[in-house]
Each structure stands twice: as C-alpha cells, then as structure tokens.
Length: 232
Image 1 (spheres, rainbow, N blue to C red):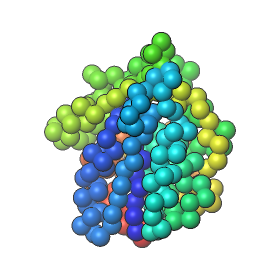
Image 2: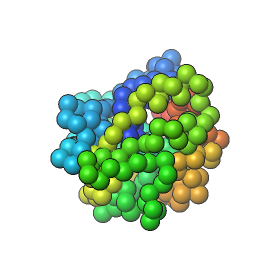
Image 3: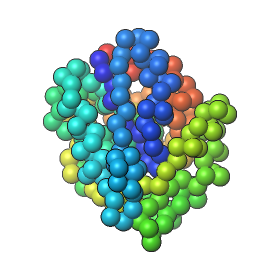
C-alpha cells in the first residue's frame, strides 16, 4: 500500500508536514509521498493574481497518483481534501480516501461555498496581490496548540502565501462518490471547528474522531498511522 498526502492551504513542504506520520508508516512497510501544490508557490511560479490555482494543484497531485499502480490511499488535509477529491477521479490505483479536518466537496462547490460571510481572523487576504495566508501570530493558538515547541517553530517557518483564486474555483468532479471514504474529525481543532467537520463527515462512509488540533499527523502521528494501517 502507498499513501499520498495532500497538504492544506497556506503552507509549503508537504513532506515536512507529513514526516512524523510518514516515519511511523515506513516502520510498518508502507511508503508515502506528499506532492507539492503549485498554488502555494511550490512549482516555480509564485502565488498571486496570475499564479497557479486549483486546476494546477489537481494536475500536480494527479500526476503523482498516476505514477504507480500500487494500491493507494489518498489523504487530504483541510484544503487538500478539495484537491484530492478531483485529482483521484478515475485513477484505478486509488482504493480509499481519507479526509482529515477537511472540506469534502460535491461537484460545483469551492472553498467559498463553506466559508463564513466574514473572513476568519487567523487568515489574511491581500486582494491587490491576489494572495491569502495564515496570520503568523495566530498560527500557534489556532492550528498547532497541541504540538511540541520545535514542531510549532518549524511549522511557522513553512507558512506561505497562496493564490486567492483557489477559494472560488469549483471542483468539477469528485472521486469520493465511488470510493470508500474515512473522515477524521479533530475534536480540538480551532481552525475548522469540530461541528463543521462533523457536517462534512456525514458525506463519508466511516468517521473517526481524534482529540487533536488541526494537524493530528504532527501531534499524534501514531494514531494517524494506526488509522491508515487499518485500511490496508
């Protein structure tokens, strides 16, 4: 089994965000990969008004999925669930989808479909430059309050600006209609409240709850590895 992890919004370096769980999976004989997302400035083009958006993110993840015939579990975190939902369409190697504190979209929906009328205080939108990002001084208390200090420091160093059009671009197709799906609710999440996650989770086949913040693969990597190992 192979795991493909799709990271969330406004961060870069998916390998780092996933590394603790990746290490736990490797010890169990499971390989994993974390594709770069172009809309986060990870593919040589900067984020911005003319920068890459959701279609480029979908294409990047789809390329990685298509590289192997090995049975694959796709894990979408937060915004990554939107990307993964479309990227996995028709990829025969994908056997299961896991959504972690994630948006779980229907065709025609976008990030803005699920947003509140007013932007949350922990996100900063720069309409002139066409980017958005996490507010640095709210990062710890909102997203990684249950992580060790060194993880908090390293995570903060990987915040980045992202192309704002990803909030409006609609998903055209979704793979989770045709695949087994597991939703991981992070009950102590301060970024995506548990109540919102539970609404998304009604679209999944199975629901697991973890007493963690927004990044359980950093705060409780063994628990996440256990969930994924149970799918093999």
